[in-house]
Image (cartoon, rainbow, N blue to C red; front, side, top):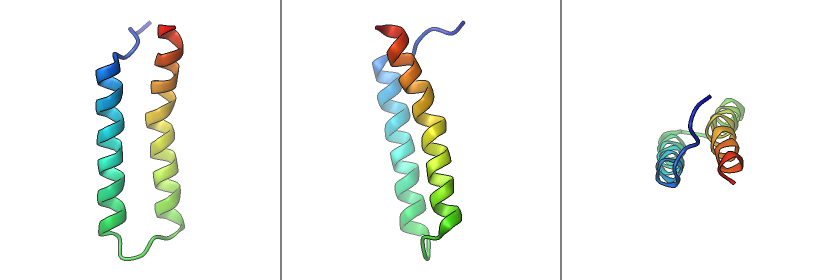
Length: 58
């Protein structure tokens, strides 16, 4: 089993994900379905481990 993520690791991961989303949204010519699906899937890949880590640490 892995150790839970520390609070600073969680904050860093979330901020990097938010920056990536900002870059994708600003550089896109138009926001369409695949872009939205990509952002939702990437959000799930980021937030599921963070939420699991928060639950383990309590």
